[in-house]
Image 1: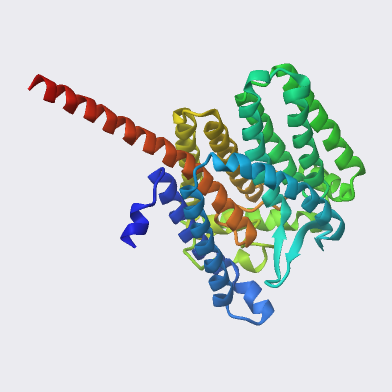
Image 2: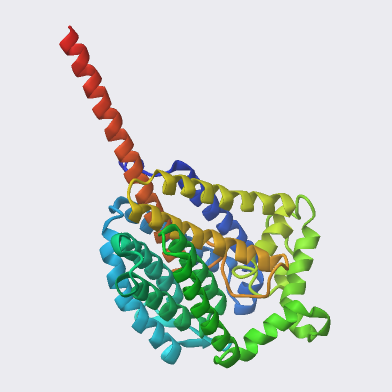
Length: 390
């Protein structure tokens, strides 16, 4: 165990945040799945144990991901992109349809559903970081740099947006942030944004889920005109938030978990505020902000462009996703199916989120090792000078 702890490198604050979020997730999921377990005729412990297995598996993946030199992820990103695009196409055509959305495929043997957009986020961000780094000398060249970048962003965006618009929009936003950091010209970024806007309009107006998207937007903008059934989720979430008060009802004492759809995933933040109060909700927000702050320090300290872009893209993706989930729970955005990273109950989403944390920690580990080496080299020089003087 001591050897394992000694081999754990990278930013200690990020490790601490991961552990705290994981513990909080176990408490929240155990409380939130009580009603679900009753309906299924099983004990809540069954969901708790399953979630614990994924949490432990995620931490294990994060540990091994952070041990791998982050530069290897540049080569891995090409493989991921080759796998991701056909997999997204397969999901749209043959995937499991839940709530009129084909987002999942079932992994044979273990019979576990897998949301392919989780893999796509990781693939696109690592691929963009690699491409922007490799094309720095020709970053203004349309054929050599701009077209491959725009093509990869738009293809992944349209394939995800047809079934999961909210995730696609967030990933597109992260991609634009990476293009800005990667020194793509404002003109080219504007073209990418225009292309994304055209694709977004096409998906909303012509896509297979156009009625759902338009309905959610109209319900959010004009709730007074909406069907009460369409306001049920957001209203129950607001009740949970309002009834939490300053300090909450206490762990396991939620009442809205009996009415709130998906209190263990999409609306877990509302349940957390109900049980832990406004104070608990603010603490959770601060934890994600501290995570983002530590990642920004990693980005600024990284000596290599690939490491900086990799840490920036993954940290922005996780933080934006977290705040999108929390915004929906408190009524600041239309209802979406975005989970709260490392807190919501989920299988493969926890595993891919953990890998993303591991890659960020790999960049941090490399920075720390270089700093330690620099200090050792300086100490050797000082010792050598003292020896010569003696």
